[in-house]
Length: 305
Ligand code: C5P
Image 1 (cartoon, protein in one colour):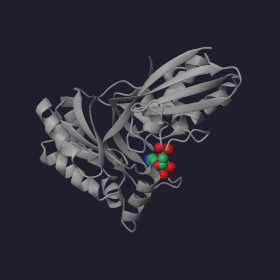
Image 2 (cartoon, protein in one colour):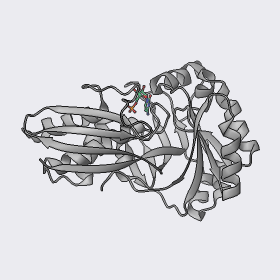
Image 3 (cartoon, helix red, strand yellow):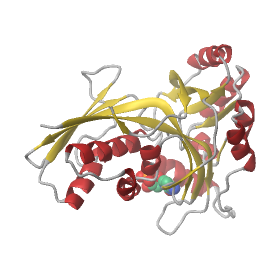
């Protein structure tokens, strides 16, 4: 039977502007995405029984299943395959095997990444012949970050995150990630954002000119100073030790620090090898920090390998 493998990156938000909650429960966003060189891999094998099945294994221990990732119809990669199957009318099924490297519930869009990978892989093994542009509406239905993960690179996100447009950007950036020992639920962080802003006027979200200028110039120091995340206070309110983690990385010489998406992963922009090691060492001892990852961005989005 036909098989295909897809590599798909994690995402970060260099800036995440969040507006007042909409009637549908989502928040309008104005964000700048960057895809990171930290990839999940998904292998899809077509079957002729019409069944969609998934297995998920961690990179660290290939024999172990990954905690907190559902294996049934709730798995977002299964939802992606189901959406494509129902719409295309194919009689074929698929076995999806995911090798997880992106931390789960870390604010790095690991679930959305697997959904984007499943769209690309199923399109291939079922011979549907859809273009990336034709996969986009499915991606948008599956989650706010999924369309960006089809594209990768750097991009501006609007709507609830699902509308992606190009941004003028230069340079490659080095990041140190402090991965927390326990994940955070995205809906819980948005709910905390609403609670903290109760009775206040929340402005429509914006992207700062300084951030766009830093990306145009490819200037890491300017970018470090322009990083921002409107969900920071909400994530710190639910996980106060994140404030200390951010401080530890900045004191060790990072050019900038911020919480990734809805957290709890903390991101540190560094500009050379010395900085990278200093920041990594300092974070390795921080309480609540389970792992330190060194990586870079931008990289391309979901693609066949
Ligand atoms: O779109 P996605 O499935 O990633 O969203 C997960 C949850 O995060 C939503 O159910 C919602 O609670 C929250 N969210 C939001 N506004 C956004 C994106 C996500 O409130 N723009």
